[in-house]
Image (cartoon, rainbow, N blue to C red; front, side):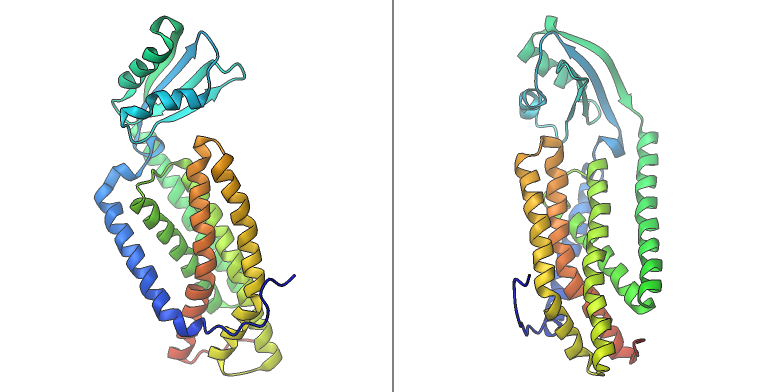
Amino acid sequence: MELIKSTRIDFMGRRKWAYLFSLVLIVAGMIVFGLRGKSNFGVDFVGGDLIHIKLASQASVASIRSQVKNLSITEISVQEVGMLQDEFIIKSPPGTSDRILESIEARFGREKIEVLAKSVISPSMSVTLRKRALTAFFVGLIGILLYLTIRFEFHFAVCATIAVLHDLLVVLAILALSKKIIDGIIIAALLTIAGYSVNDTIVIFDRIRENLRKTRSKNYFELFNQSINETLSRTILTVLTVVFVDILLLIFGGEPLKNFAYTLLLGFLIGTYSSIFVASAILIDWQRKFGLRFKL
């Protein structure tokens, strides 16, 4: 199925505007990210308070979130425990557990709430989580680089890896600009984005290699544009499919999934953009500057 047929869009001719757009967005986002400091991170990473409560009657996660929403606390995580809808674990920034507990008692009644546990999440554990997240990220990038070097060649692999790094930086920049909190769920979304981005890039690179073999043309600028236009319909259908499902998750998913779905939506759109305007564009500029000859 082809959604768009016989396009002749000059993608490579617009690549410098794309470079400028990405650079401005990343720099602006990273400045805001730096200014916010620890405020960028959730309880999982910077430590905080934990309360485990049991209610005398059933309640929903939504009702508890609604009650504490007006406390102006940047991040509160509410998790249901068990199947009886009467036990909940609440995570919040340091020094906020008493305010949260008072608010819940005002809604449900102090005599109807039993505090099963109240503790502080250790910052040392948070440091471990940050290290593991960074390790997972860099191992993933190295894996992508090695796989694409074997699948294509080193130049393709480097450009695809740069595109993945670009996607994650742009998404992080937008998260910082929109004042979203980065927690374990967001890290999972970022790793998912990396996998999606490189998959879309592989489709375009595969068509570029195929056209190189068929035509043996040395006009790489024209050949790259041709390859991107030929895969444009597939690219759009792929991103529309995942975006449609993600929007449903964003609308109908529970509160913990909204930031996950929001991050994925950003990543899917940016990943599609970078496959054309970052990975392919950097590869053509590399070739034009150093006169690379692609292997057939």
